[in-house]
Length: 492
Ligand SMILES: O=C(O)Cc1cc(O)ccc1O
Ligand SMILES: [Fe+2]
Image (cartoon, rainbow, N blue to C red):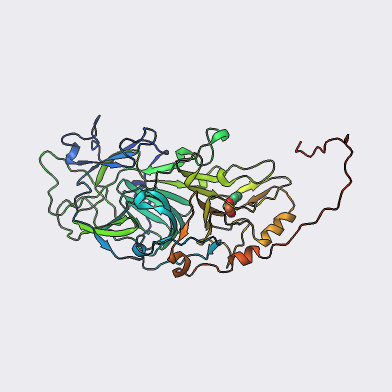
């Protein structure tokens, strides 16, 4: 059901900034003053610390959030394994072929968790190394009495089709196509679909966290600006069957009541009955437990380990205004560093609408082989240098150009760009492609190679087998006289 204006304002409130130390309380006075863990936290809440880095990580990397909640997260029976395709299909197959996928199917029945498919990855969540690349397709909201978290890593979601209404322990995020969000490792969340089926891409970062890329000589603004990242405000439910939450020394907060969630409201008695299911992704297997109380009971929080969203339309695109096609690193939105400076385990790169003005320049991406692997998706529109339409690079589809796998414009794009008149040209109007780029070699799951039935077998043949030979053997030239002037073939 679409949110009314009133619901919209109440529910989706954000704090602006990237990697800030935020604080938010849904009930005034819920945050303790000048300390984190008083003997009795305000309003009878429990204090719970959520660590995103080792306690002793350097201050500039340290990430943690203090949650003030009605019951701590540990209050649940043991988890039990859940059989699911994602728990079994995690063997990665390493092949050098260029791969492209037709748009992945929508799913009428799956919710976000059952509709999340590992397509490719590298490393090992148990070692906290590497990353997973996913597509998701959901036709149903998650049960309002359910929550999901991943112990494997921070989850970056790229909405491609449909709207994601995401309830997290720390508040609500509305994520629409052309927006992305990051849910940190461990944060429990629930995905609802207020506008029908949703489809998108996800990257799970098994190590470290995303940061904004260095700007170097660009200066202090540009690319994704820090103030455009948005983190939710605290929001909570009260549903604690069999518990009297109104002890003599405790005040009851006014829970934010969400009209689309039958379980929410201000009731603190056991009238609802049904249990909440918590599903955990742990070493790429799913486990579930049930508990009688809502997991969305965080009344206040403070810290710098929190979900956030970003509208890709706010990206400040920078490019060459003289000649040559620059490296795509100028399009980096977020970057997760490896141990080597400047070498990312995962970059999120976008290709937004932009002007191309390069003189005497082959304007599309050059042919190249990259020591990094490149997984690309298309949110909307068309990508320059790749065929659009059926059998091409299509919204909702994907491509993978692995370590040192050659790629570049297809024949038609090459010939067109080679002969194009080089007037200023706007490319990608109304379109947005993105890339997950990684320094790691990426393996593909059986689902990605076979079960999804989306691999385009003719991708290489249709793209590059027809490339023409333009080579012309030079005729022997007269040797220039030793006192002839320099050619002066610079750009001035
Ligand atoms: O391969 C691709 O399409 C992505 C890409 C784009 C670009 O502008 C330069 C290099 C690159 O890998
Ligand atoms: Fe590339």
